[in-house]
Image (cartoon, rainbow, N blue to C red):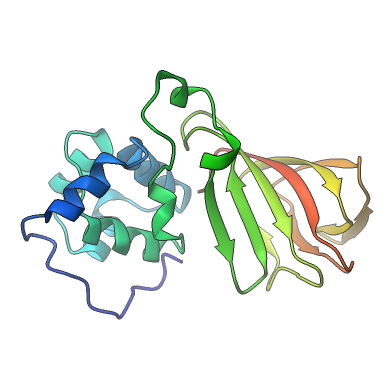
Length: 209
């Protein structure tokens, strides 16, 4: 989360990138700067606040967000840690193609996994741009959110398989396959009391990660 700064040392961010770094940047999602901006804004952070956490200048961060500068691997690694995302989130396994702006192939989704809650999410949207994001959320058996959350978002979902208990404010709903939901601004928590994965297509506006 952004309220914590990683304590582990990172490589010198101002050093010249190695050949491996250059190759990895060539395989980036192509939306790193835009994704960083969306992530920062979703947390209510200013350019100054994020730049301070990264030990970088505001000018450098502004250039990265606008796509005129490419961050080094060390920068991306630190950004991923700040937002509790896997390093691979900022890279795509799909080859460069004109379709990438509109299409996400099943084998090239960007994946986030929260070990604390046993929640695995796959980004179905091509990037974090636009007014909403779409996710395939897989809630492991017996998993639950660690604490209720309240977000300034509008969210909707469709339960594909399994069972999920969704609590909005003080109202609890037991969802079964085929059920759908929508909420906006309510305090939300979830739990999977079943013995199999609960799979949900989840839509969030605006994007939060």
